[in-house]
Length: 221
Image 1 (tube, one colour):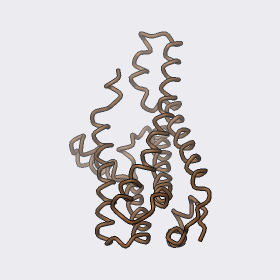
Image 2: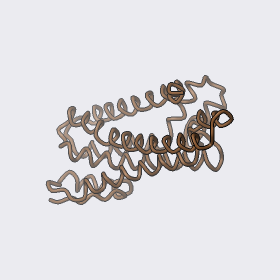
Image 3: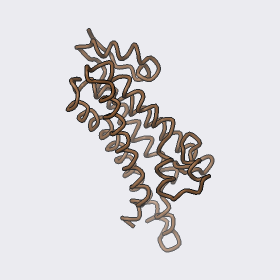
Image 4: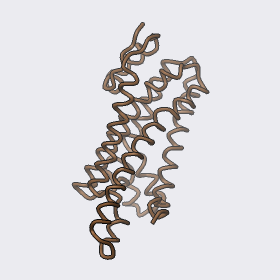
């Protein structure tokens, strides 16, 4: 059976997509969609740079630096964001697929296909966070779609706020979609599948929290 990758089908028709993917032996459109997602990720991260999100260390230098040098730094910053978008997308596509492949009997290519659906969710969340930041000046951890608002209301420590801010509707949806596909494609017990999916997402959550808390941008200022 052949399978043509349709990105939106993985989000809205998971039963159909998982059945077709399970039976498939020949695949079409996979790498074209991967390239498309990498391009979208680069554009989304680039737009966030153009909108000035994360440029605070550069903006602070304006009084002491010429505008021409500021523009050069902002341009390099935007290019760096685009490169980061590609690297992050590649990581989210292939790293978890490799882990799941080592722990289950699912072919690696099918796991990469599943990760394209997960990457779509990640990019959608990124777009929402950019809009919230640009329109309402809300940082990602203050998104109304996450638990960050609750943590701030309770006046919890900053580290906990960042952690709660990462637990969003998109985070939960990513876990559910990954689990729904994996359980249909493997004979591995559902508890084991759920455990490894949750562990991976917790790893991502903790990594994001630590990087936000440390504020990586200050390491290069």
